[in-house]
Image (spheres, rainbow over the protein chains, first blue to last red):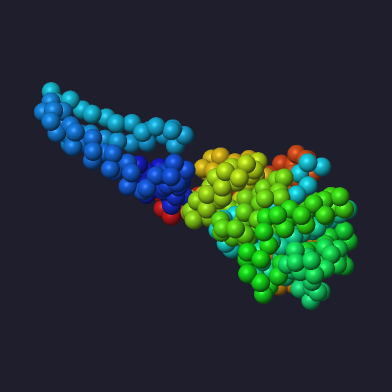
Length: 77
Length: 265
């Protein structure tokens, strides 16, 4: 670890992150764009609800060991 | 011994399967165990080169499968390492020339006569791989600490599971401690974490490996070889002994430490 917060990520860290994600897809037999498609479908469905901030919707794999994906749907104030 | 038939596989080619098979077989034979190494990479014969036995081949595994000769006649005895035998692959036939049943039959006919039977698997995930894995009690997956190799190792692991085989054990091969220290190579720990397999060996990059192979003399026979030492340790672990992993930490010089402190590469 370097002292500076703006230190570039090492290629080892990047490789690890990429591999963890790619293996999650491989193991589940998912096509690489599967999560993207889920996200688009959800965004489409949310369009009908004006109190939802569609621009803030995020879908992610919470951690490397997790079997689930999480969706965050922000509500407008 | 329950782990008598050991298949070495990897998915990706060129990660060191044959080198590891040849060296583990040699290490165990040098300790007095009766060992046979089967080259199941039909059409791309190479284990003979690693062991320096390429000039002594008369019959090969396809001859045995076709009933041209009995298996004993096809075995090449290593003169240097007593107790070590090679069952060579055919070089001219195609990779599907032997079926899983053929190999199971061959392995069964050798099982009583040997303490260890190694099978050097072809790269890939096709029939040849399945044939090589089918008779195995133990599977060793070789991965280099590098993206494509790790992904392919994971794929092979999944296929072994589908085939109802025990979970493979992992050998991380060609680890370069200097690159790891620089943050430019995954550490063995990372590979273990990503693949979720039991680690049985970490073999460091050894600049002398090519020269051992050039001479047809397995590195495990040389005290001074660091990769040879790591591979002898794997052989010990196959015997059920608990051997600590080699300390492969790279000792950085002062300037390298300083550079790292300031976030440079």
